[in-house]
Length: 338
Ligand code: PMP
Image (tube, rainbow, N blue to C red; front, side, top):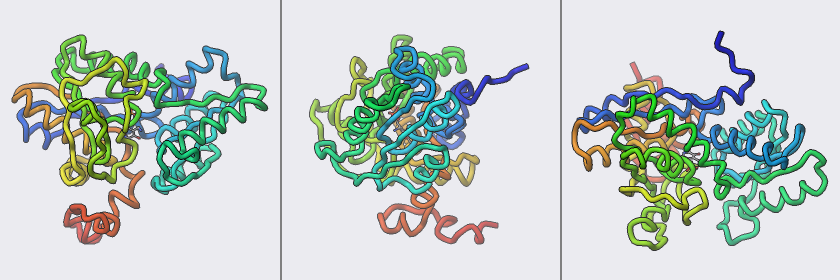
């Protein structure tokens, strides 16, 4: 028998999928870790599980207690689902600009959703700061504990990748992996897998979208957030606690114009329905492939499932309004596909 005790135990152990076009274009084996196959359809289920388990171990959270977090969406979905399966309540604070699909899913998963304007961190109503205050307030009255998940600076997040994602990649490739690439939201994935695999000789690269300052922090030592991106869940302006003590071997700046056609092609030709950050990652993996030369094996993260972005990434009107490339099949609509 092979039975998971509950949903929380089904997080992780995702498959590695060979990306055909990316591999053929580079002469490398480019492999995607299918994190969209987690129960909440994203990589963030891993961080959610580790953050909750850590809080339970510390005694900060007891059965029936409340988890509070500020999140662009995927962490909220992960915390709500994994939390429910472990007997906890969740309150999620989200910037109102995030996709409707993610907001709907958080509510469906039983979490209380609080929407705040998308304002910078220095504003006290920023979603992260708001969630920290709310958690402190709830902790005063919640007899079973209320915690602030604090995914950016709580290193239980990257522990999920040091002990889960990284070793899984090593085992799945029999140690025959030369490179790893990921974008940064909190930095948990990049630094966690990096700390697990860099000591084994794996070259680790950052793929950074427009509007994020991590690329310039690593290459020039200065935070410069140039450009913009429609991708959600990635982009960062500082070295979070999850990134501390880690340094990538390479860093690439990836535009939406480069990343989005990869996402569209994968859906049409390889059956993979992915969000925009996966496109940034795969474009980054192709850069690393060209850096290392043909014959290498490079792993990247397929972060979340594309249906979460139907109203944006796969919406011709939205793409047109942003002057972004859209494939003919999307422009003409599904009726035109033979
Ligand atoms: N892609 C998506 C869609 C995400 O939601 C996130 C998490 N915010 C990431 C990538 C980046 O993961 P991490 O927080 O581990 O850096």
